Length: 353
Ligand SMILES: Cc1cc2nc3c(=O)[nH]c(=O)nc-3n(C[C@H](O)[C@H](O)[C@H](O)COP(=O)(O)O)c2cc1C
Image: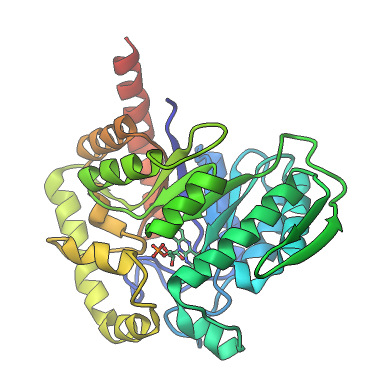
């Protein structure tokens, strides 16, 4: 299996500590454009553009708009996969499928959606959009993706469900590059697992230790599924250094900076739906976590060789795509490409020999 590496775009600024002199707040289009173009040039395979309409830490701060940015990035890049998250209640499935198909065309077959069913209540409440309870959000998301998937395949769709009533809608042009853009799903609850087994191509797992990841993969593989086997991606915050102690020092440095964010994090916690699984998983971590979506809980903190070996172990467990966070982002993304990419290639060659 070839491992792939991706970067989280800086859609709402830094992912670790929010007040870092080495990474001043910047969620601008200019920064994100440069970041993704550089990631592509360095050899990264994917860029993930998270979907938030307002900055989830503080709505006074800037937030990049995911779907317009994705279209522009698709036009500016030539090789990297552009994955864009989508929260179903924010777009009718016909409109979103049309946008996704257009970006698939702009990118010439490099576009993917990441279906996420939301945790930030404030984003919906302030807009006057109903923030349904957890499993109801998934029921809505399931109907939504069922129609989006069929539309992306170029089918003429008639669908009458609890939420949507579509009669004979068809998108043209269809996808000339493949059957349809890829569908990723982020979320760890039972309905998220059911949803990805039924309708996803790749399951994004929040960063966490190998044994958890193994169990999660197993529990999803046990679910009924038609078509190609499900693939797996893992989110992780990387702190890689020349030595184990250099990485530990960098971790402590970021942790000290992150303590300045206590008030912001507390507010964010208040806005988070308590039913969301990732909120609980991370409480099992013995050390404080840096980064979002599991962050350093995945354990990619250590010397270059240690980080490469852990990636290899996740790869053996079935993870194919590593969706990475760094801080300061650009400098550490370069370091990872320079130091870890060659070590992964070497490890893969040794395994194949
Ligand atoms: C890789 C990944 C990317 C995500 N991206 C977003 C995002 O862009 N916007 C968002 O609101 N939530 C995002 N989420 C969080 C999901 O919305 C969250 O996990 C969801 O509420 C599912 O809850 P569950 O784990 O209880 O199933 C992401 C999750 C993962 C794993």
